[in-house]
Amino acid sequence: MITEISITKITDLMHELNQLPNHFVFRGQADAEWDLQSTLERILGEKWSAEKARKFEDRSLDEFKSKYHIYSGTEHIPKSKLSWLSVMQHYGVPTRLIDFTTSPYIALYFALEAYDPFSKKNLAIFAIDYTSLMEKSLQYIQSKDNKFQETRFSLHGKRDQVFDEVVDRYSYDIAWITEPIEMNVRIDRQSGTFLISGNLEKTINSIISDPIYESTSIIKFNISYLLYEGIYVALRKMSINSKSIYGDLSGLAKSIKMELHAYTTDQ
Image 1 (cartoon, rainbow, N blue to C red):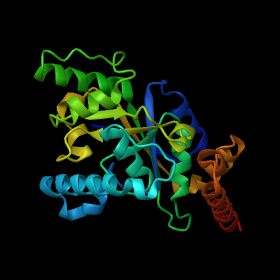
Image 2 (image 1 turned 180 degrees about the horizontal axis):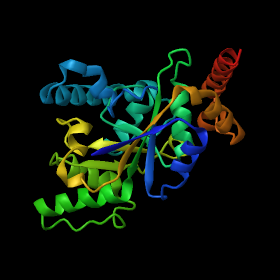
Image 3 (image 1 turned 90 degrees about the horizontal axis):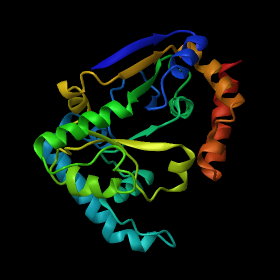
Image 4 (image 1 turned 180 degrees about the vertical axis):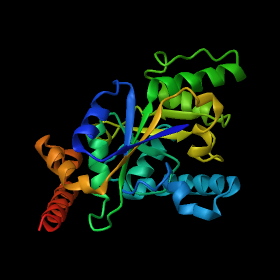
């Protein structure tokens, strides 16, 4: 279950984030009312169904793969399904991947990047105990397949293979946190990783609400909109901005846009 903590002071926010161990991953959202949802879930909205989710991913994946060589230029060709989904997500195709990061401050940045400071809506940071969640997921697979012997440590170097050949193949009702072996520059700069529903036909909220994750710490920090400027200033002092996160012209443009937002709200 998700534990919600209300934050009304910058000092409390920094304290709460800093006290979490290193085995947590984070996601920032511009509206505290939003649930944890993949872009695939969001685009289907109220029309969501297991059949439509499966049909949408299969069709998108086939079309993207078939035309990739036309537009990819010198970019490498992904070798696994997880890598393909990651590239698709990178270029804006709705997928079941949900972006997370190992840095709470980068998560804060992404909450601000999409935030409308005039909306007066609270922001949110989700924090998930990666170690606990993955342990529970692996235990679940082992309960269904006594030949499966992988551990969090043995997964290193073969995350794509295990996702493709086990998690996705058998559509296990588990949550999975990973990043493809073939990472692009942005994922690396953003200390990025992904939260994924192992069963495409189930939403991530229905998965993490399962009793197997009852003891896994999943926290939602509901952050007052009044802290927007203070968070922006704090991140700027840490040199966490669009330029450092994206490292390209789009990052520069986003950085200028955010500075304008900060300037107009300060007047």
